[in-house]
Amino acid sequence: MSVETRNNVKVLGDGPATMVFSHGFGCDQHMWRFLAPQYSSRFRTVTFDLVGAGQSDLNAYDPAKYNQLSGYADDLLEIVDAFAKGPVIFVGHSVSAMIGLLAGIRAPQRFAGHVMVGPSPCYINDGDYVGGFTREDIDSLLDTLESNYLGWASNMAPAIMGAPEQPELGVELTNSFCRTDPEIAKQFARVTFLSDNRADLPKLSAPTLVVQSSDDLIAPLAVGEYLQRTLPNCMLRVVENVGHCPHLSAPCASASAMDEFLATLGHR
Image: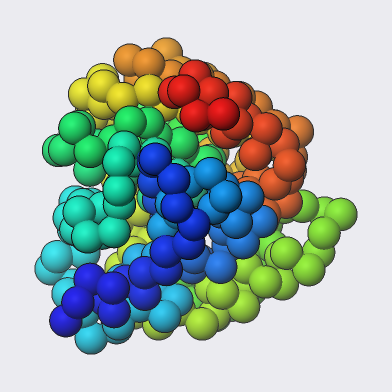
């Protein structure tokens, strides 16, 4: 099976560098439609679906491989090797930001920069660290997801999206969640919400932009501030947005932050 088929890889544009866009839990590459096309006149742009999502090849889903984020990082490095030209700027939403982190640590020579949209290295509060949830919160969330995935998706997706002025986006995310194979979604949720990549943050040498919503149920401001303190070379930009998906609900503000970051890398 080719990498292209496995991950439904799409390539647009050309340029001296490549931007690779990776979606979050319950989503697919269509979620980048307001951002990725803006860059295809200046960059080679690569979008893809994580295995188990969108139009990826579900036959490639291996529960053992994807029981940790490193399995997705392996796929990302294969996609970069197969489709990227020149330096790579990786753009990852939510859990994909940590997938990119792991790939960037493993192959630092391949990545010129990372854009993390609504990232969280750990969702669970721990001592002085504020992740936004208690362990009991996460256990309850996962138990509900396990017993009634479609009901959970219908309730959670609009809350995750936020964007009260754009209710159609909540409907879109709900439909996206509901299209995902429930068994795959349950495992990916467990892997996502129980992950802890805090110890990995200092190992990422490449410049990083964190795009943080001003009001995010999943990744509160304290998480963005923690990332700014902990990543060696981090720019934090807070966009005025309610919800976890500023690339959909506040694309102009997100693009402005990205353009500022890209300029620091020499890409104007």
